[in-house]
Length: 531
Ligand code: NOJ
Image (tube, rainbow, N blue to C red; front, side):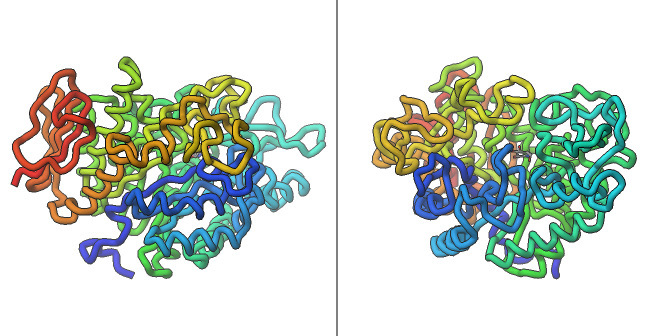
């Protein structure tokens, strides 16, 4: 195995990866929920778009309390989404189109319906079965003051029929018990799971809650339990959270060194990307040291407010931090856990400006060295949907009464004038698992296909430009801000992002691609070749 990253670049280093939220991409069997055959049938859309890889959210056997992030069997496909043969056909079809496949791995917790947790409940206090999770003896109050990311206490009493049931830890929903990663069988099981999917040809893994597996010894109280959980509030970037007993513990890195070896033994540049909400660029970069993850999402970029100086700070800090460990950066603006960026940037402005800014931020991201992750529907300019209370399904909604993440998970409109807009073969006018807005007809793939001004056409142009131009420019970026303009310069390629309210001419040269109708306008990014 070689750790020398100066050799030929692996496929993932500058890859554009498209995230498919499996429930909401395409529904082949007409039950209103997306599935693997639906995705396979729609893969040509991704090849046409010009991405390099697809990341699939969990499709394993699961009671779906957290839409698949509660896994009951890591080696099987939930019947809702198909079967193992469907997964294998999807991987084969993707590879046939030149697309790599990344699957999701959920190691922090299992479902409460996983065989291990069921056995733990049945076996009772003090049993070896309970030692794979964090069980604690009965007491009037929970064993410590930790809060669930989804609201409420991070402890529930186990439902085993006893008079004094034990507590068990769940950093997320009560149906997602945390595994005890100090137990050797836990690590061994996940190595087997990695091999199971590597043997089926997957190219990589997105690792869920990668910063959470190891807890501080003794599970001490949190000194500020009401602090918003990582990823739920942008205060995480601003403050030092390095001492939180459940997040970012040093021991977590040993897990990833072992996995790195497992992947390396397969060849083909298999990779893993960390979902690790860490306090700053330096702690993020520890996950991408040469013998750990290949990539870690740079959430500071996603959390940055619309401003040239905040974007500049994130780019500079990120490139410095990953550069120190000889890794590359991984950029992302939207995913299935956050408000879509077209809507985030509309705050204090209008939906039109929000979309223009979203396109501009995307084009800026695509100019940066490293990998970029796109979330399904952003290429259509989809906004966050205001899902009615009776339709909401996010476990955090049930635990807190706060809106939650349903609004970014509404199924994709493919074609037609009314729901389900080609999402699946259900009766016209009937709705998929989350209702689609009436006004989405104009946003469908078919509606945008032939329109050169559409967001879809813009994404295709931007991705084509990225493929054509970036391999020929230096990886070094010079970052400048002037008033409200951010300028990223890579050799003779300049990305000029105007975050202000008045037009600013980009530098003279050939316009390669522009996120809006007029280079240099407010809310617009422009790539210019100045050479
Ligand atoms: C992060 C996932 O992206 C999110 O959807 C999930 O609810 C939590 N981890 C818990 O698995």
